[in-house]
Image (cartoon, rainbow over the protein chains, first blue to last red):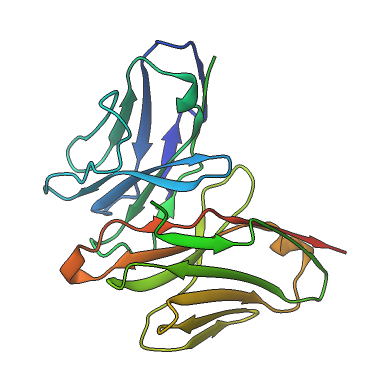
Length: 114
Length: 115
């Protein structure tokens, strides 16, 4: 498909476990973003990758959260020692350039921490 | 720190009516103001966007009004239809001197258009 692909679409985990969320951006898009969507909280910026530049990690809520982007394409968001407050929809978006215009979002991963 | 304040959080409009969603921003470095539309189970999708050099942009039934001095912008949906029922997010992005990348979103407005 031509869109942003995220997997899994749903993830249920136990408190304290680690989880990995995957994002496949649109081919050729150099910019990749992760956002978190919680009920009543809007879209919370987590991290941004642009080409080979150092990522903007300023939105990561704690050191339990990390992300990497391999080969300028696929990205993985890792949450260690999950907590119940981590339950949310995690959205990935990509865009063609660095200017933050027209973000293309995936359908997200619904994370539930029990 | 909420840099983009959006209201209302929910809105019910009758079919054929006008839906109006408002946003206010704080950062004067913002120079691009998009609106995104999100249907249940899907990611947001760009609907319409405006730059601060114009006061209004219209695309079909959707219009953005922009007031630079008040640091406010709004989305107007004319002749609202049940298919417009979705969550709408306003957003802002800083310009080149402040670093383009971090697009900041509002809290979202859940719009329901009733027949």
